[in-house]
Structure formats: C-alpha cells, structure tokens
Image 1 (tube, rainbow, N blue to C red):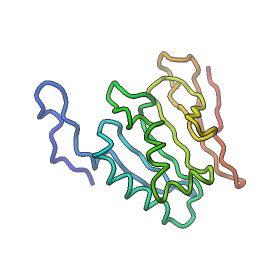
Image 2 (cartoon, one colour):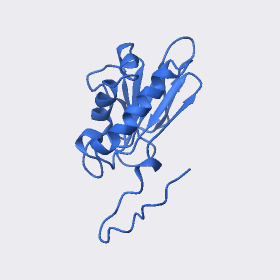
Image 3 (cartoon, rainbow, N blue to C red):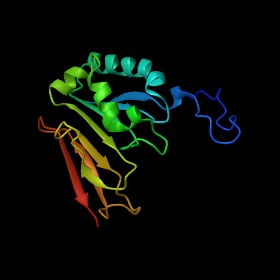
Image 4 (tube, rainbow, N blue to C red):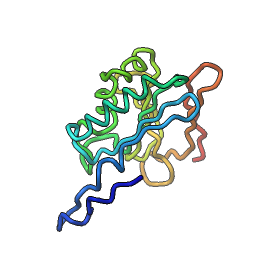
Length: 162
C-alpha cells in the first residue's frame, strides 16, 4: 500500500519527503473515525487529502467521534505553521464532514513533539491533548493517556506513572 516512487535521499543535502500518500491516512475503530497526518508537507499539498478524509468521516455510519492525529504541536523543526496540529485542527474543523463533528464537540485531536502530557485547548476546551510524555525530557510527567468513548461520553483518561 506504500508509494516508494519518491526517494527521500534524492535531494542531496537535506531530505526529500517521501510520497505524501504514505503519511496521510484515515480509518475507523469502533465509534471513532481517526485521521492521521504528517506536518512535513504544506497545507496546499495536504488540502486534497484533508477534503477526502473529512468527506469520508462525515459519511461513515456509526462514527461518533472524529480524532485527528499528528506529531507536531508547534511549527518549525519539520512542520509548517498551518500543519502543526492545533492549526491543522482549525483547518480541518472548517471542512464539510469534519465541521459537524466540531459543532457537536466531537472533533478531537492528539499530538506530541513537546514531551508533555496535558490538555491543549487551542480555543476549543476539551478538544486537544498533548500526549508525548513517555520518557524523554520535557515536563517531567510520564503516563499513559487512553481515549474512552463508552457510556455515551468521550473521556481522555490519564494514568500518571511518574
């Protein structure tokens, strides 16, 4: 299922990103529709995928929660300004299919990079979570986050192991 037509080492000095198709995906697990992305591409390059993924999300029977997954919480160090997860969440939340989930408070996002485990409001309280405190230096909080969608609720449980 992977596209190996782009050689990441072909740029000489630096890095040529591999095919965008290898790093954008969506799938359903239970009542959660998950959309994953890589911040290594521009918003313009990602827009067709974004529209496709949000259309898919809005058409799936049984999905009650949309979850966006990405690595970067801040731009730079590999992510464009609009591709770091908080900004990308805002872009996705405006698209047909995803906008209904946001309107209902059911579009969520998780991200990493900064090594902390903490809620990340970005204007929508309860929408975003930084889940990156797994042993590297950062905030010093180490633990296991679990997304729970049972009992007609959406909860992010956090089990502190620090």
